[in-house]
Image (cartoon, rainbow, N blue to C red; front, side, top):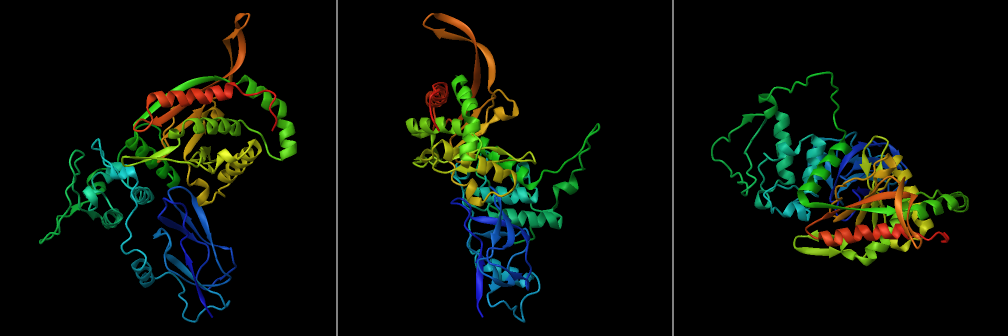
Length: 445
């Protein structure tokens, strides 16, 4: 008889913890190898954890909603197929103490460069703290009033968990945080610390006038909201726009799309054609494919293109096409279609959303002519492509100017002005437009 440890899997370079959403198996139940034992969530994607061996689930060491460090033992499986007589029937508090004591001492949250830098007086938080706050319904405005015991007064995992515990008990300590000076760190008091009634108890519930419906954000929407706010706080956004005549590209795709689908067994959309153009321009202007770590610019040699994908719920997720520069058009089309389908069906793996170095969002698929997208941190640029519309334009010909009907499209590039200056941002955006305009009508696939 032997016990096999099931550990929280590593789900990307920047992911250090995950939240348990659901146990699909309970102690004493038989599990097959590769059968889903539990469901977990990070700030990027939900995922399933399969069993690494066949046997009986002996015990689980964490409960639903626990935040677990990567690499921690979360369950044990007895591989002889028989449950132990003293197997725990369910999750118990002593197990929680044993489970959290070993792996979580002293686990510190990993801070992104944005969380370490405070040039303009704004207060920033690590992705871990934001994730916990989102899961517990703590808005950013409330985070501003939580005293931090971390470096330079930053809120740590311990701080946010203690605050939430106090809040659920009906009381919590409150210390207003200054945005211009480092927040004071509470010192152990020799007398009874001041405790006040929670803000919810003091403040009456808001009254909404008119005929309204109040809808609570789901977990993913809260994470998206915090991610967007953090990005704007982190990067000074600038947006450059260009216009592209994509008539040749439209005509070529219309001509070959049926043959392409028949031969390659996958559809040819405009997205892989856009990605092709982006990749070629990134090779010319590699600074666009970078990130910032303090005062160091990290230029990425791999070109991993994230593509913003709308889910049936209305939420947004960004699966990543890795090494897009090494794929031909067929390979890009297959990746685009597979990742988009998996995203809509909830089948993305954690690694499918990790490691992006540049993001493309097609706002034109919803009818928008253009947009000003928010950077997907820690990247430094994101390109939005608008709807392709027929318009009368002036075309220069050897015989003179002529007004003709062309397929036109707007491109808008938002970029981090800490790294990318206006000249580079505008040049890159224009370069992508030229790539699309110069699409060869006689190309093969």
